[in-house]
Length: 133
Figure 1: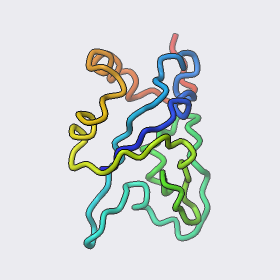
Figure 2: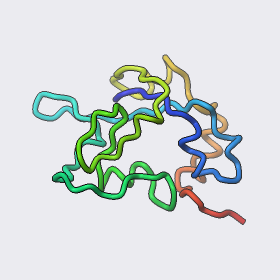
Figure 3: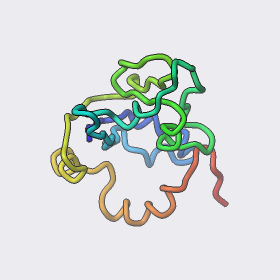
């Protein structure tokens, strides 16, 4: 996987009432797959056949990982037609790692263990613009 430090503001639409909870820098472990002798980022696995689809906007109910099922996603800016270019959100590329634990050990977790444990059941299902009462 590739380690990517993403601008925290990218995630603000997911937390419109609490953007102050989002760190300035979010560490993302972006999965890659070894296919036919080369590493391919998960965001490039879906061939759009040159058809430009709606880009991922981080708004609405679709998550980033939902979006890669319908459009390519590129963090490096080296994208072709139909691929959602998110390179403008990248603060730093952190290199390649065999496991996400290796990435997080070297660069730290975005959230502490307690916050992840408490927040994961709620935040993993939180869509942009979702309301809680």
